[in-house]
Image (cartoon, rainbow, N blue to C red; front, side, top):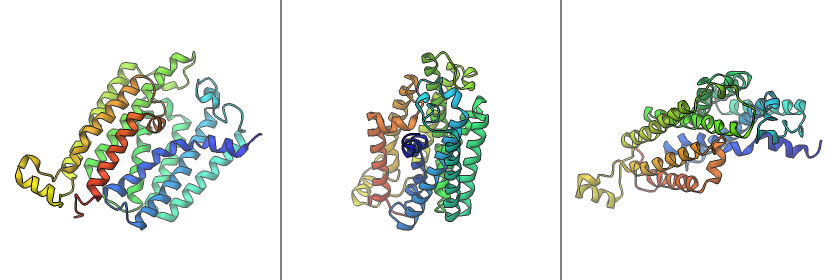
Length: 311
């Protein structure tokens, strides 16, 4: 078997680790990003989750090997293409899961529980839940939610109920968008490579995407309204004194247009059938990259740039 390390890296899908950046959300919004101890703990949590995710992906690829060979894209994966033997793949998956659990146990018990829960969910998903319509979307969304709250547990950070609502909405939006894009790929092959796609109607998934997309930006708007930090920089205080219209105690609300644009752009890609792998879009679609960068820069500036004060 040629180039085994390369095949192990490929089957681990490191590009999907970008989704694990969600662990840093609590660190950022609790305004601890530049504190060395919390940052180090979240960084180790990120590494642990990378191992857990890769273990889950490898296990899923082993179970899906026959269907993946019928898929226009997945047929090129190491296991489906025969470049990586199944026994070796299972050994790697088990080793990665052990490493993930060991690292998580070294951080704290609550984080360990979430990583273990994530692994159990992914095993159940691979063994059959992915074939049950609606349940499959909920499991995918749960993975995003677990990531965000794992990052909060590891540093004992508080996240408001509005932030939780936002996380849930975005997770469901991404998960339903993934399924909607997969429907477009059916046209490229004579085989349906995911059983739940036999149940979903295009119009139903369209309504899911629209519903959760609306919920995502509205919940962020509510979060930014209720959770924005107070302004302390003189120029903003002067504007607030000048007119109530320019009160700056809701600074995070200036990110709302960017969030709406990002959701609209992503939704347009969904209906073009380009979102089966959302993590790739976040690394390749220029408008999305720009909107994410602007959003992140504004959030960091508002929370850390002297515009606000830690209560």
